[in-house]
Image (tube, rainbow, N blue to C red; front, side, top):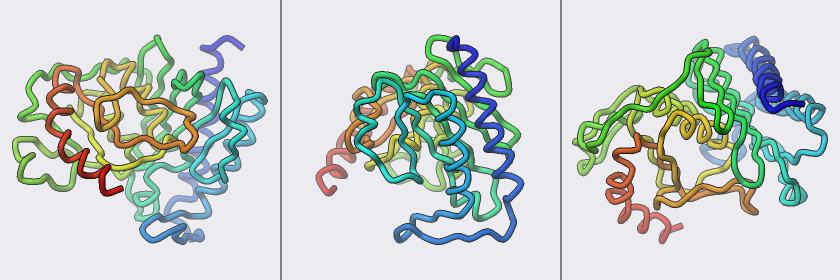
Length: 261
C-alpha cells in the first residue's frame, strides 16, 4: 500500500474510533483509577481493542505499544510499530470537557512517520506524514514565527514566578493537543519536566515537527520512540526561534527533577 494511502486509512480508522468514543461521551460508563491520580474508563479499553484489531489488519507485521495494553518486549524487534493512546486526555473525557483525542502514530525505526489526532468533541482532525507537512481539517499548519521567549504563549493553568513573562492560553487536558497547539501557531511553547510515555506524544510530535516546530526532550535532546521503557524525560515543543532559550531556562529545573526521579 502506498504511504499516502496508508496515512488516509489510518486517519479513517482513528475517525471511526473517535465516533465511537463520542457516542459514549457523557454516558454512564465504568470508570476507575489504575493508580492514584491515573484515571481510566471502559471506553478507553473498548477504543484500544478496536484500534488494535483494525490497525493490526492494516499492517499485520507491525508491533504494538498502547497505554491500555500490557507491554510486550517483542515490539522492540519490529521495524514498524503502532504507538497509540486510545483517549489522550482521559480526565477531560470523564469531566465532559472537549480536551481529549484519539492518538495514533506509526513509528518506523524509532521515528514517527504517520500521526493522527482525532478530536471529535472539538471537531478537529490533525494529520501528518513525515516529509509531507501537517494539517488540521485539511488546512496546512505552520508554527508561529516567534524569536523572543518573553511573551511566548503557553497552554497552562498557572505559571511559576520565574515564568511570569510568559502568557497563559487555554489548556486542554490532552498533552497531544497541547503540542498540536504549537503546530497550529496557537501556542509558542509546550514543556513538561517529568518522565512521560511515548504513547502520549508520538503522533503530536510528528504533527509539530511537520509544521516547523522544534521538538526535543526536556534537555534539548532528540526524541526516540519504541525504546525499551517507552518513556522520555520531558517534552519540549516550541517555535524554532525560542527553543534554545527554552532549553536554557528549563535546564536547572530539569536536572533537579531527574535527580529526584
